[in-house]
Length: 418
Image 1 (tube, one colour):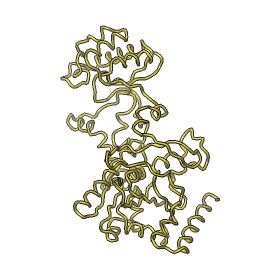
Image 2: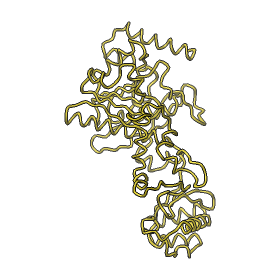
Image 3: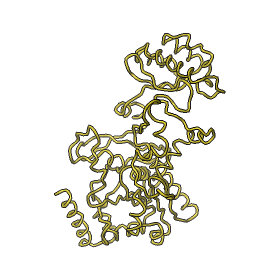
Image 4: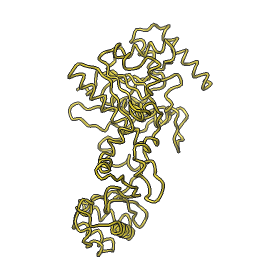
């Protein structure tokens, strides 16, 4: 059975996360994704991160996460020869996708107007930090800057401290999701209406999508939400993170009336479970007309903190196992997440072998289709691994290919001393 995007060709000029992560999804779903890399490679190949003691030849974790399943063609697009190869690839492609800024693409003649004349059926997909219009359309973007501008940082962190960026690249990740969704939507429109078109999205736009409830709440009330530390800014009630007596943390989200009283009984504070301000689920979710003031919310959370601290994590786990309708989860770190039986059963992480470390695992394809499923493909490519093969398919001569390869090798030697 073919995969959903089998037969589609995608030309990617991307770096970091927001562009490449969308390309991974397209590759997982069957598209041939050809990544155009500069002579020294995508910078994410070399980003080591923290606590990374893998051998030097191992690609960076960011590069592995965002580029498995692709082919790498190494070109100097600032030369006529390199740019000619790019245009030859785009001429017969279905999608050109990039998270490079528009002025750079425009200078190279890789703008939408030029490429749509070359290939009228092309889906021209670009993503940036702050959207295609407005005074800051071409402003550079990094993860934390968009979290700050998009409002996410303002509601993350302690109530009485500074705002904090999230512990993951939420802005880039959400932008990549929107990017992939936009590309697939444009391809569907082309199938139905026979037109190629330009598709734009941005990391800032994705912040609106991620925070649609919170932003809508502000629009309706005229009041922005405030940071609430370990609790949800828009829920007045017990929802939040609490530590058991041995320091293990749990996210407590939702509980029915009987379990609510049992919780406080087990935690040694039986009277707290009978407080009429919190005696039904609607009140505890902060969805009822508010009788609870700030002081009562603080008191409730203090009682929750004390109850959790009165028992060890093993005691709480046994209690929660006997109350399966309670929505409570241990806070897991990344090492625990990848070994979670649920993650393994759903193939959210899958085996893969790549340079340096050999057998390892990667984040898998998260979209499961019953009749045309996608699949995780090959490891991330070595720089320029597919240059010769792709150029031969395009009809370039051996001398032309050798010239391209020699030119990019000279640049690498000048930069890295290779």
